[in-house]
Image (cartoon, rainbow, N blue to C red):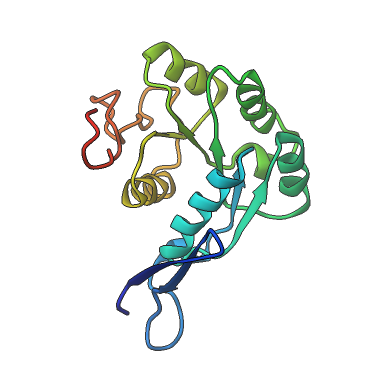
Length: 188
């Protein structure tokens, strides 16, 4: 397996990340590198941060959408393996977007895993996402490793949060809420 290296440099107020996560034959060592993601986030900073995390882990196929309407169009036009959504419960459009995906006439689209990045920590807020059909929730603040761990878990166990026998936020059915990762110095 190739050596993983992450270099961060500043150029013109943008973060430049170079990543080497390749085997000797030039192929990525991580199975996620073959997955295609649709990243939906209204803020450019959020899109950039998540894209850089994915790229630092060898995931290069990330379609970015600034709006839910744009995301639906991308998802209908191109094949994706999962949706990563920067969402807040108070944003009713985010919950409606998840419901639209789940109710879509195309089975491939309606069954795509959806991962929400959110600061919703109340059980009522989490229930809103669960009821809409989310597969996983990554609580903010999160680390790069925490996000990628959750993404991997979704592909290992793609069931949603909703019914018995499906994964919970932490990935353990008997532990309903657990922060995936907390930034150093931040208390959970």
